[in-house]
Length: 169
Image 1 (tube, rainbow, N blue to C red):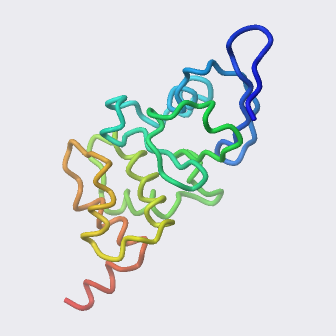
Image 2 (tube, helix red, strand yellow):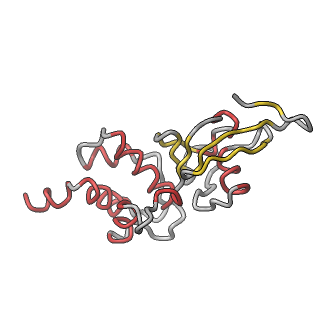
Image 3 (cartoon, rainbow, N blue to C red):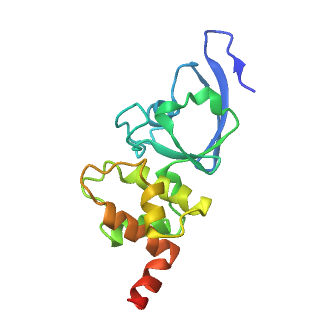
């Protein structure tokens, strides 16, 4: 449990961020988004609307996708946080990252980290069994450039469904 620091209103926080355990002191009003960007320099996570409506700040907390702009960092004491930087594998890109590149599933790229983290959560949840379900369950992540078709293609590629669907056509 978080403990109050002796010097201020700051609280001690224990997190595992992208596989590395971190112990730090944070003010109770610091959002998870600001902590990741400002203290850990993990700038892949973007600040878009700062109201939880666009999904640019999506990260995985204990494997579940969340809008990090809406969560106070201190409320996730002991959690495991994965950002887009933490998805990459030692031997290269995460399959979703590679699929986004292959399918040109980004335009300006601002929403891409949140889209990829959300897609990783979506795949882990295992609830999207059709393209329509993928699109519905990714609807919390807005792409102002309109790359939705390519995003769905990339997710289907990783699921292995796209090749089966194209073969059936």
